[in-house]
Length: 136
Image (tube, rainbow, N blue to C red):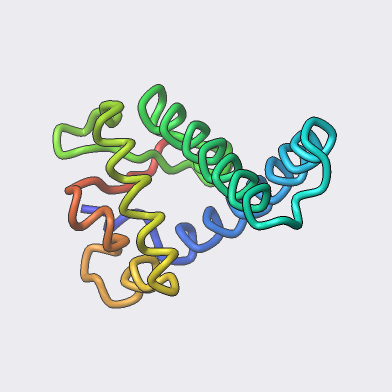
């Protein structure tokens, strides 16, 4: 259970993660525009969005499956683990990213879920049976 990871710590890590993602997306957008030109037409905008989603996914899946910690998680001293208290497999990390993406498309409801969950789990963590733990 995540009794030792407070909602405030999870929220702070999410905000920090968002700031890191914005910086990463700005860099990727700059590279995309330099390579392909403006991205205001429907097909270029689609490919830009797909590339930003893919880059973010690669970042999260790599971090979750290698160490269980993104840069924000390291800062806030939390770690994502599965039921066996180990880092996620690549398959688990991919599924978690897909579920978290679906949660965002559903107006963030899977993230708001943490406010009512007795174990302080996001909905995608509840479904996947993953959780955050505190680390030293």
